[in-house]
Image (tube, rainbow, N blue to C red; front, side, top):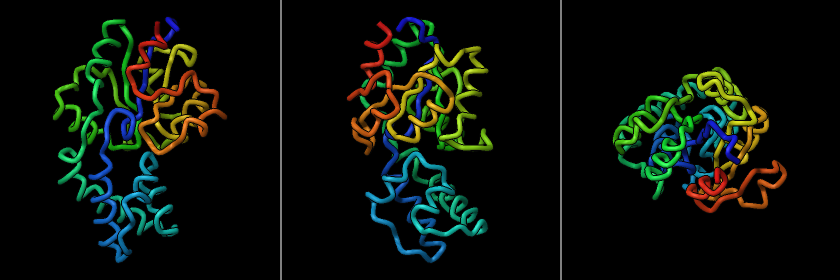
Length: 216
């Protein structure tokens, strides 16, 4: 697979685990809106969705004012807790260094806020290993809309056949399908290997280091 020139990553459950910070922030926002707290495993099942979709999934509420308030309260708490409650997966830094040594462009396309991703990368001293980021505030249409992936491909002057999108969720798989890029699934999120097969992934990996095998 030497034709791959660009590797794009989802963030949550792909490069790192922010689940405890997300649970804290979601339940803070729900409490502010007088909703009961959600069980951690239920919150974790929404990771990777946009904040409006998360609110709808947890409450069934379509009210745009409440949806906007939920996002604002989530951000308010996340500004306090998210960086401290996020850990990168083992081997991520070494993988990124290896990809850069192969002159591969590296980006992130996530429903997480761009500035939050920057904070986490800076905290872990790996900001310089990425060539670009598309976060929630950078797009009009969140994943699985391909807008973010297409933006990264344009920035890197890449094409779908030379771009690999890596993610842990079916939303990520559908995003890659919509952008017509290659896709590799990593089993660090809640989705099973079997669930990805309908998308015909290039690989279903137990950990990110297997990307190097694909390139070789």
